[in-house]
Length: 197
Length: 197
DNA sequence: CCTACCGATCGGTAGG
DNA sequence: CCTACCGATCGGTAGG
Image (cartoon, rainbow over the protein chains, first blue to last red):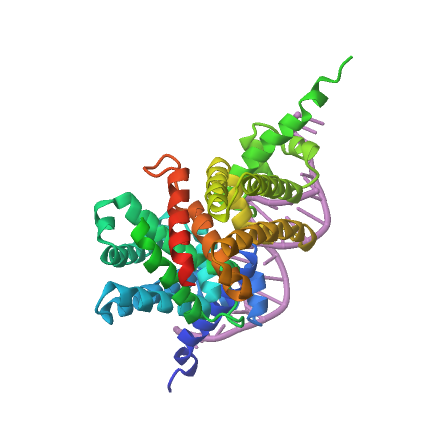
């Protein structure tokens, strides 16, 4: 006999992850109890512990799943582009779509990274560094002198991430400005402004 | 007999506030216990409660003291400027100096605002809105068409705050780039790029 | 004997 | 200004 419930094991894990991301985003990791999560999932704490060994594993899963998505869309944008200008457009639109589509996970990534223990935090930080590296390379392609000044190149990449990451505090997908429209504003500011750095 | 301890009451409150800001910035508001704070202050929990009625009052004091400073330097920058371009330079340098000088308080303001109850959070949010308003006016002065498009004007202000607020994740005052140098990069990007919006 | 899941409770610690 | 505590709740696990 086929074991029916094993079939949707991964699906149930995903549902828990999504609800956890929403609670962590709203109340913070420490502000969310496993009991809160169980209640939001309309089940018991024991069930949560059946799917995840610990609360920390849930936090790590929220973050790692999201950063893997970010890495994937970054790679896709670079692969599909013939020049740095087009790369910047595709990368920024891909990032913003993902930020909006997975807003809760993104907020958790930005707010609760410190609550991971050092070894697991290092895994996430390494993936973030790779994204920064990708952006630095595109910016250097747009403005070659950045290649000779590591400090300015890093600062320029951080100006870029500041603009898009800060959206988690104010951007609403149901507002007058959509993700692509905002991405294009960022691209305009960077392309026109970067020559002055 | 003079009541000696009353004389440095405010001073002791300030020391506690400063140490609390450091702990909140590092471990989060919920990740910091009052016992942690007492230990860091080399005293007892009871002493902490002698100077502040609750842990939440300490959080509010950290945030309100910081945002009052931000409002003061914003007002000073506007008052000392003859045109929007100069205003942007002074405002950005003032903000960055304060972000660096009060990095812990700034981090707490950005990370733990949700842990204030609605009434007190509203006070902080109102002060933040005033800062946003000031920036929007300067940006409209630099690029008049923003005055006719509330959505773009707000987005432009948020691009600006994103660039400078994101510094709390990466900027180190002992690095190769100082606060004024970074502020000038932000100003260049905004002044050159804003015409494209 | 297995997986899925429950009500109840564990040892410690939180803010006060 | 301290030790000794409180009601409650924490993350995680017991038996069945």
